[in-house]
Structure formats: C-alpha cells, structure tokens
Image (cartoon, rainbow, N blue to C red; front, side):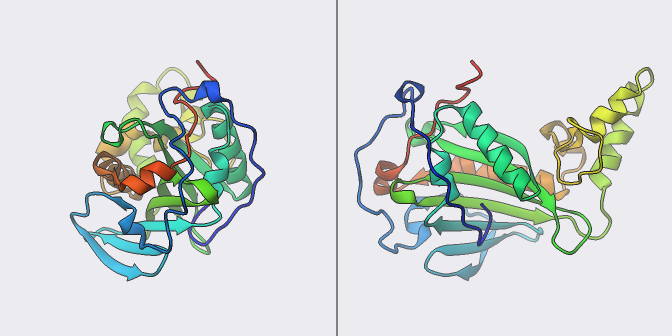
Length: 255
C-alpha cells in the first residue's frame, strides 16, 4: 500500500448498479509503456522541489516543510484490486482490514468526483502509523487512481512527527477542557473513538479536520492541506482517463 509495498488480493465481482455516472471507457492499452508518471497526470507543483526521479517514481519536497509528495506508478497495485469492490462501504471495510493488518489506521476515506475530471472517480485516503524505529507518528495522504491491467497511479503526501510528540493531542485536549466539565466519557472519546486502549496508530478525535486550524504546522494538518490542494488541481492525460477503473459510487452501501 505504501512506498515499496505490494499486495495481491483476489478481486470481487463488480456490481454495475453502483457505478452511477462513472462508466467503462473501453479497454485501453497499458497507459504506461514506461512513460514517466508525470506524463500521465498533472497537478499544482508550486513550492514542490524535485529530489528524486526514476522510471516509476518521482519525489518532491514540499517547500521547507517536512512533507514529501510522491508520484508512484505501481504494478501490480493493491489500489486496482480495491477498485473491484461493489460499494464504498465494502471498499472501506477491505481497506480498514488491510491497514489494520499492517498496524496502520485509516483517518479519512472518500471517493471523489472532482469537477475538472468530468465524472472520473478517484480515491482519497489519509493513513497514520507508528514511525519505524522511532517515537511519534507518520501520516500519508494518498490519492489513488486505479488503472486497468492491475496498475495504479498514486500521489502520496507524507509527513512525520519529529522531536516532541503529542502536541496535537495536547492542543485538542486544551480546547476541549471547557466541554468536558460534565461527562468524563468525552475524554475517552477524544483519546480513541473506538477503544481507549493504547494503540497509537488508531484514529482518534484529535485527528479530525476541525482541529487542523489550531495546529497548522502539525504533520497531519500539512498532509491534509497539501493533499486537498493536489486534488483540486489534478488533471489527467486523455489516455490515463481512458484507462481508469470505475470506483464504486460515493456513499454506496450506506445510502
């Protein structure tokens, strides 16, 4: 799912009724032909400084911040297998299960139809995990474009906590202090939406977007902000759009 990670999962049969306006565009040839990833998609690169490039991967640093933007062409890809799910609900469950097996938490998940993409659907996911061999957490905002033939284009925004950790949670607790005068369970909810046990990668109330404004320099706030900017500016080459797999309709399975 992440950089250098590959998954092979047997796809489920698709339910055409869940497709909505997103229709099959005809089987296209392999869009890559080892074309550089930035020849397949484009987005706002203001403040991005290229630091690495290979046949399937380009890495930019985001201005002076700790974040990186990674454009990766994966084959085979977990994301193209995930697109086989018939509804967003089943896709969400499958992704949560796969991430939990890797000790990663799904903070946000959305299937989007950006107006500029003329009905094409993309998957936007925000993940968190314990930093490898270090204290603190790492965050990944992933924009996934599943393609035919088992390929996928992913744009990942990554950032990690460094130095003092827990600053976001402390800031949120301070803001919630006045709201937690009557009911102690609000503290438990803040600490963990599902289970108050010590699982650092599990999403909490402090991870929600409402708190980004009070901690704008926190890695999670940066990842969410940069990912949103890239989605708003995303453009596809015609041959990329023709090769997109159709993701399930937004909200399907719940509504």
